[in-house]
Amino acid sequence: MLGLRSLNLLLKDLEDYNEILYSKLKKTIEKKKIIAKDEIDSLTKRVIYEFATLISFVFINKISKSIASTNLAKLISKINAEHSTYATKLISIVTKLEFKNGLDADELIAFNDDIKDNHFLKSILKIFVINHLYIFDVGYQKKQRIYDKLNIDIKRQKEIAFGKNK
Image (cartoon, rainbow, N blue to C red):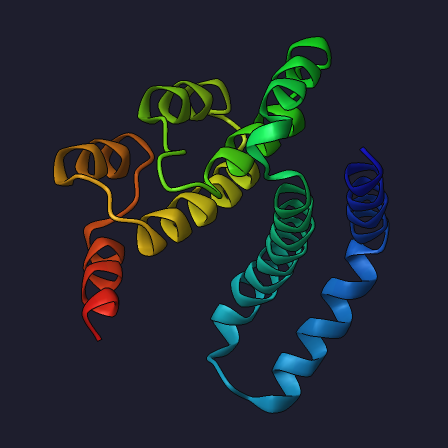
């Protein structure tokens, strides 16, 4: 739980300093003249969003790798049942994804449906799922079902498939 508290603190700081970060980043992008002026706002917002997503991914990944053990599976389930939040559910799912047969399509899809309005959490979930599908062989039908339900586009599917063959 310490990792989640630290992540929460960091994300709150990002939120508190969002305006300052936004203005500094926007000025930097304007100085570099890397994109058209009408796209600067959307790029600035996207960079901040991607940064927050990356930070969250790193923290959650570290937590899941630290507790990914078949010996701890029952304890993780117990904690998830007693303290059922989106964070504990995500960590439970991500911890299972550390293992070859850890992809439970029904559980993933149900969780994805639960977080339907939380785009930030959905982005993080997708990263972990894509990572699992890249590392482990998963049946075609199961993979297609997950891509469809989690709304992962076909271009990303091809990148994963062809990246594996390199």
